[in-house]
Picture (tube, rainbow, N blue to C red):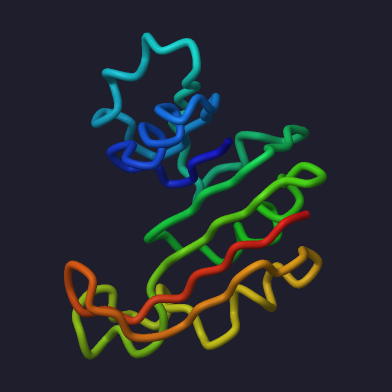
Length: 146
């Protein structure tokens, strides 16, 4: 499993707790230092926006991305998904600017954008809309398989 823009490792920790081997990548892994000794976790510190893709030639059975959007990475993620692999992607979408950050359109998905970006995958679920979980937001999410 690959956790992209892993942040503090919330998804890495959850997936590891379920027994998966996890590769966590982020520009700053300091909030995940406690996982360095875990044989089932590979920590990769990399700038995903200003450096080459650190996983050239590797594929992953699962890829998880939340609260992160760098559009040039979308086709790379699709190519990095193994046969029968699962992609789960969720982040903010247009309309979120009225509820807070992010509000810059560069960081907000357009309606159907994830479906278009991953059109070569088989769509399992797609959602786009307003929600009030911990705070009001407009989000888009997709689950797809290769």
